[in-house]
Amino acid sequence: MTQSRTNATFPPPVMEARRWLEGVTFRDDRPLMNVSQAAPVEAPHPDMRQAMADAVLQNDDVHLYGPVLGLPELRQELAERTTRIYGGQVSGDQVSITSGCNQAFAAAIASLCAEGDEVIVPTPWYFNHKMWLDMSGAKAVALKCEGDMMPDPWDAAKLITPKTRAIVLVTPNNPTGVEYPDDLITAFYDIAKSRGIALIVDETYRDFHSSTDAAHSLFARDGWEDTLIHLYSFSKAYRLTGHRVGAMLASPTRLAEAEKFLDTVAICPNQVGQHAALWGMQNLDQWLAGERDEILKRRAAITDNMPTLAAQGWTLLGLGGYFAYLRHPFAMGSADLAPALVREAGVLTLPGSMFYPKGDPAGARELRIAFANLDSSGIGELFDRLSKVELPR
Image 1 (cartoon, rainbow, N blue to C red):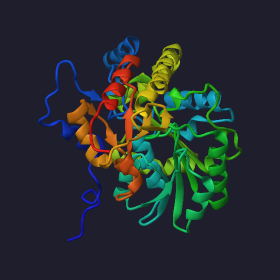
Image 2 (cartoon, rainbow, N blue to C red):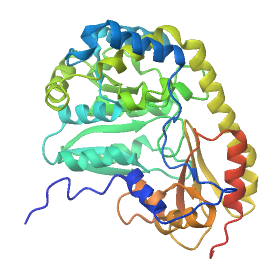
Image 3 (tube, one colour):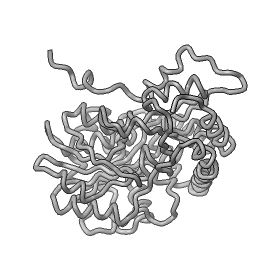
């Protein structure tokens, strides 16, 4: 009997990792450190919560279906903000609001791919991208990143076939944290444009980039919307993970195709979450700058504490956004090491094997640390615990 696509797709990695906690007891003086999921655990800013409550109580429209492509005011606000950040020109009709950034990716692929079409994805890849490609009947073509964890555009060009519909970039990257420079991103754009395929750029972690300069110049290109599909998330910036608000920026023609998918799957994005995102962009710039500063302090704490692990044979492969990506020194593969670290160190992290094609040996040596919910002292304790793990090497 033929498997369904969901049956043939691997389980959600974060949910699988949580099962490793079953039957494990953690000491009071060494509680679990969960660095497996890249999501803020604190509630939104109090003033934003009040604005959300006011919307629920006073705005009857938030309880009804809204426009499939999102609130016009939010679409326009994001268009204007994108123009300010990157230069160029973005209009409201080039913006759609989605039920989280994962849905934005799904909508983009639905608008691009037929059965058996191909999408080039750098490895290590964001596992939800791979899962959706599998479930949609498209083929993920792995583009291997080398020592600097950056994909090579010319290697990507060699992978393009008549079935290729898009190249996907995530920057700052999930899982490695690496921030791709403008010249690398524009090289991918030029290749995609010349070959008549799309370039999907997922900037979920844009607000925590280490530079205040524009991350790339793609929006300044004439006709950017004919090649670029840009994805964004409000979840990390404004702590709105549970409200599922993301965005997709592309041509109005592309968005009209995506609208068919969005209408069928969710009808409209979460109304309360959209009002919260709009209020946040209009009122929380200073607060968001503080959030970014705190993440950068934690990133610096990773660098400061890395010598402790380096002395034990660990290597830092990538750092940025919410992530540190490490090569471990142990004899066992990461798929076995990650559950062992729950027992040996009270640390829940994800193995590199979850970010590669099945059987790729590179993943066996790597681990992803999502550090956004550890302060600097917590990062110090994390590294101390990892440095004391006694397992075969």
